[in-house]
Length: 133
Image (tube, rainbow, N blue to C red; front, top):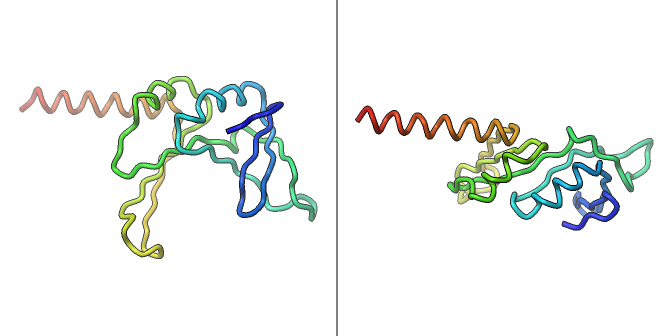
């Protein structure tokens, strides 16, 4: 992903939308773009009847995206989750082989630190279960 002067380009259908971000967010994007699957940005359709050429992104409109098809987080993702400020949405596709109309997608959005806390809790539960058995 290329960022010049804190502006990067999203594709929305056939359109390209230039999104400007704060310097701190631009630094995070530069460091994390290769680690997560996607960076999502919520943008509107039109502003005062005109197509949006460039928008200034509210950090709340941005989030990292990870798709899970049975894979867990990579070591790089786990390391980066402690550093990111933008939330991380994890999408789960239940059965990718079903017809498109029957695909089920679920997602959760949390901070990187919340995901790490959840992972630690699950590891502790597994260790407790092993000790119990």
